[in-house]
Length: 174
Image 1 (tube, rainbow, N blue to C red):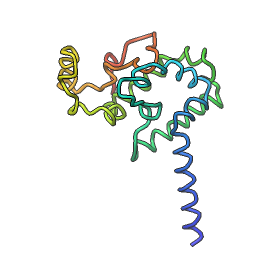
Image 2 (cartoon, rainbow, N blue to C red; image 1 turned 90 degrees about the horizontal axis):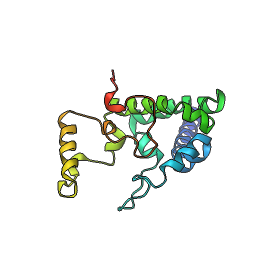
Image 3 (cartoon, one colour; image 1 turned 90 degrees about the vertical axis):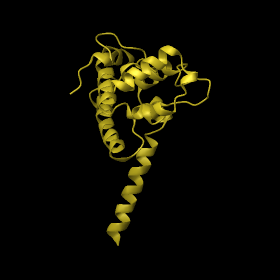
């Protein structure tokens, strides 16, 4: 009986920690470099738009459920390591020096997951072509036909586009 109580307490505590670390407030106040990223996010289409629906850090960078959710949370420990232990990205300047490298990591992740986090909110089958420009209709049809990930075209929409190399479309992902 005691084992069941301890297991339930650990599970409850673990879920509480995962939930607490999955908020916009946590993301933007826990690390200096994330407060900088929050400033560049402000005013983007994911922050302010005609519908009033906002996508926050967690919406774009964390799967909603299941094994991918827990894997991403474990990967976040490495990011905390880089911030608090090695101090490799703990200032705006250090983050900027590594922006392209970090962007490539995110782009690679999003390409491998077929932009799962984007598709959690944006369902291509529900997009009304009458409300899209002709150019957007053509590009979305091409993207669908070529099985492109959302990030292949829609990068730099919530963060400053990094300098230093090719964009996500040109990356070869294995």
